Length: 324
Image (cartoon, rainbow, N blue to C red; front, top):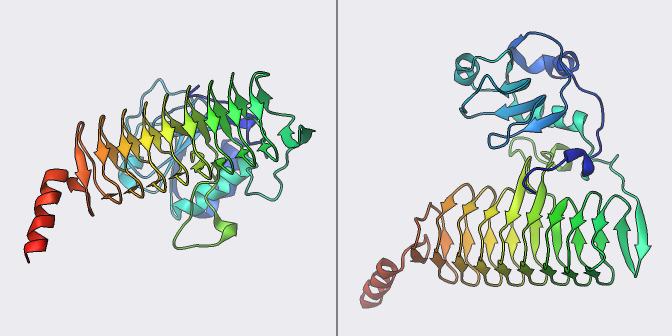
């Protein structure tokens, strides 16, 4: 389930090959190397390399000769010079180029050209491009969008929106949730709805997950946001794009997890706690209620406070403050 066909969710917009790519981004090119003209059919991320695809990167990664027709676009001169690739571009204005290329390739739901077709079934709108197992129950006033797959014995309660998502079996989703919504992708130097960074990934929810009411889980930017098996998520929880949540998570109400955070198995998050983006949380971690996690946490840790620290040290500091 970790891999997926992007065009099931985002219709192809226009054909793209090396020559067309050159025309699109020509004003931004500082230097380029291209051998032949090849078709470009998809996107890659640092964690998931696909054949005949583009990868945008600001950071170093291990390039392998076995990668088939991987086109590298970077604004980092060191990366451009160090990678022995037959297809690479050194560019300026990285985010602008990223948006131009992705909007050329795919039509996503923040593009005015995006469309879907629905059937009205038992007071809910179900995309004709989705697939739902007959054993699954869909409540009233739900919207199930293009490409969505829902497995066996799931319960989708009322007023739920599910799009850009793959759901496994025995999943319960509470009233008023939005699964697969747009991640918070933007450029601080160029704000506004016209400049949104396309979010072309999905959400994957594994077996036996329970999600409470009014939760939001954003889809991945290129790959996926994932909720691990047997996880329990309370009401009013937000999980941002590219978050990887391990197995058997227990997350209390009003928690927030910022984007691109990786969390191990068996995490416990107390109510109203939050985790910053782009950090790693180990296995068997407990985060006390109202805590704010701003850095990596090792396995088997118990943390509290702001910024969150080992709970024993946090308690000592509280006692010291009271004495003052």
